Image (cartoon, rainbow, N blue to C red):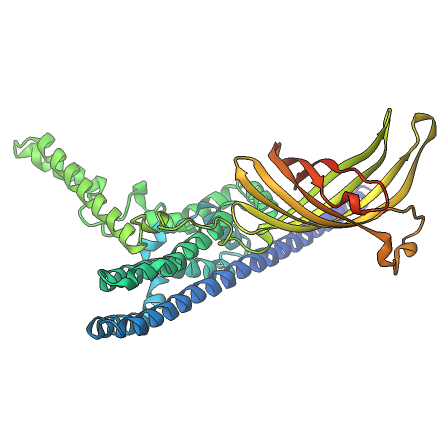
Length: 459
């Protein structure tokens, strides 16, 4: 009996282990699919935006060259030669940008490095193509920013002193907004989603993963964390001394009766100079002169964002015709706005008019109408906006949605609204208060309020 019991327990353990392994494999597969889908999408967006920015700049240069040829043929020829040479050599330079170690240092994103190491660990030490492709595209994007800045400077140099220099604003916009787009994608990578955070939290507790990260991460490749004494590779930064070489040199100076302190000070000064040179190389490699961060025009803060990032969902409520303790009706509305720029939002919405009955003694929920809305909000100062809108409202009771089909035009009542909105922080959301005047209220047969007060929030 005991033998049979032990065999049974062993079978249960093996079965549980097998199920656990299957669950782990399923989870790892889903995680790999999630990472591949997310990073492949970002890679395609970066590639598309890079190509678009380069093509846009090239078209702008051709237009400027054509205009310049009518004013100064020699300068036009000079600019055309420069432009042709730059764009013909661009494909080779983009390929070389993938292996640029200096740009890799500048482009380092800790969260992306952690994800890459995590996926390599889960995938049996094999790298994940989507992560590697994204890193390559980041290198290309980094070089593209430099290319755009260099072409802008070349155009400025040739067009200086001509009336066409004023037309460089479009070139500046192309370079600036591309840089903003790349920075938006970088910020996305710096903040892993919930699934990635959960997986990283679990793996970070394993010694095996810690050891794998120390040897295979991008950080390890840059700073040689896996080598003896955790030292920088001296060959990668010319002039810096390793700890061992410094120890040997000091021993030699002491045995020769020289002053080790002077030697150390000299080496520190030399290392400082080399580090500054290395820093300058990095900045030059990626256009880090800050010029793109100070445009000569007022930038549109929304232009570099995707369509979905410019969408603003909202909810508001207004109560009409107060009746002592409770309002007779309340309008509940959902809105969908699109951010034109940092100041303006346009959008549409739909409202539902809910009846509350005739007081506490006669409370009941009824369907009293619905409406369609359009609106515009434009910032005037701080959190204050001037707001306007046009609405069509159906102000009759109904019991079923089928009753709302094929309504005659006479059933709809118009509202033309103008007023002031105040937007303020409400936790993670943004609260809104609105006071609006309906300048079409007199045209409706049904008595409607001329002044409307609404409160709500944006998601």
